[in-house]
Amino acid sequence: MTTKALLTAVADGLTVHDLGRELKVGMPQSPNHPAFWHALPRRHGDVVRADGGSAANDMITMGTHVGTHIDAFAHVSHDGRLLDGSDAVAAGRGGKFVELGAHTIAPMVRRGVLLDVPAALGTPDGCPPGYEITPDDLAATESRQDTEIRPGDVVLVRSGWGRLFDDPDPAVYQGKDSGVPGVGAPGATWLADRDVHAAGADTIAFERLAPGSGHSVLPAHRVLLVERGVYIIEALNLEGVAAAGVHEFLFVLSPLPLFGATGSPVRPLAVVGG
Image 1 (cartoon, one colour):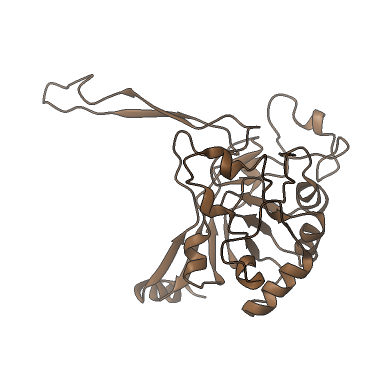
Image 2: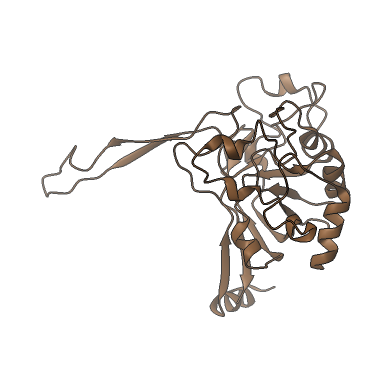
């Protein structure tokens, strides 16, 4: 498509679904990562210029896997090796991953597909806690929606768990005791076999967490990040796009070029023509 055609599409009107979560102190997150914190080191009135002007400024601290974020290939190793076969310990010496860090993740402007699994399973309140989304579930959802997954797509798996993100108790969304729905190794293999570029979900860990187990084992991460080279996007807000009945869209995501980092906060967008 030419630039003129793209500008015409914008002029004709687009609907943009924000798939990112609001970053705020106290939001639910994996216990394995530093929490988000925001502060105002300078407030209006702390310093007032001669002309009466004043300014406030901020500082934030957070892990790169907090809020909606993408995992770089440096994030997970298995048997001491990363995706490219390199020694994981050696690759991280110096406090950065030069070869597979977040700075190597190119911005994404790709076809996106939402697989609304609860809609296909007939469970309007979402998948049950600790439910493993199987390859048959994914295939049934793909068929029901008539959204064939193609090589290079970004596939977002809705479990319905995202509706719990704003629960007053962050532990509910974290789901350590209850378990969290998601794909396991077979579901991850099903996605990778379709040569997807990235896969995402509306949960902290993307994959199924067994009740009481927390993040003790993450086989889907092994399959996607270490064995097959598929990026993982976590803690997506998929309720709005699902409610709109949108299953196919232009997916836009640009990670922060954090040199050597294992992941990056992101604000993905699903763009639909007017």
